[in-house]
Length: 322
Image 1 (cartoon, one colour):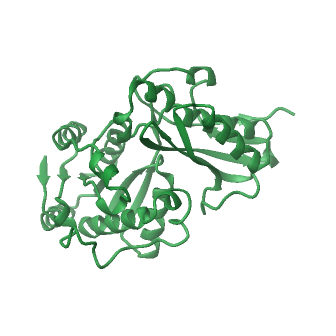
Image 2 (tube, helix red, strand yellow):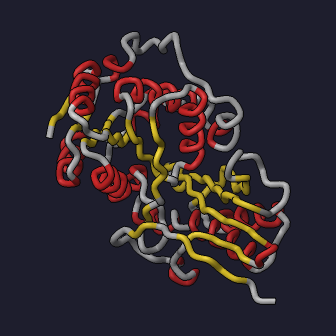
Image 3 (cartoon, rainbow, N blue to C red):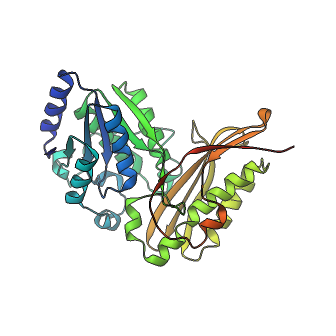
């Protein structure tokens, strides 16, 4: 496996593999790789001939210098995980390799209007401009490829899909299911910063999502009631401070006016000093009396459960009795 730090070298290596007939897979990350990233790499390896994992803590998507400084950096372990998963290349550039004018911001950035402003965009101004800019640069270096992103960062996934479509980039964006601990906590590099007590409390995000999805499955059709239920669930956890609890249309990320069709429940909260996000898919089809949601641990298993091996979130269907 190659460790590449120069942008031109990455582009040259992938061009050569593509010229030889390889299908290229790219897994963009900020490092501190865990089982969720491993699932992305595993899928890329299964579907592509050459896989490049990018490891870059992107300063443009942080609005808090302390948060940027605290973000874990574990390149040696990241390289080991990527190699064990079968990746061919790890691209780990320095900041100035990606942004030559750093610490001055680049003159050119990418903004995806309509998807970047709400939710995480409202709480972290400029965050998605940073995401869109670095992803556009990475795709420019990678060339024609398949790019693998996790659904845990659902708004990010929507932003990336839109910029690829709007800019006609030769990239197929592949969405991969969220990987969770057995108690439901979504895997995140930020979880390593939680104390043992905060780690237990962090499961409240998943409990809130399951409460919202459960209410919809039971027949609730008032979006406001579902939002209040999720918010109240988070508020009941003393170590958590709610940022938002929302129900949106999956395609547009607009707040849902009615509970019908493909929806996303999203929640963000700070647990201790660590900000966490999570989401869950819900599909409501009242004509067929079907509500589809994501498979989850039983609600009673979500109280006070500890960490363990990871599981991949999968889809189930709940049929309502009449």
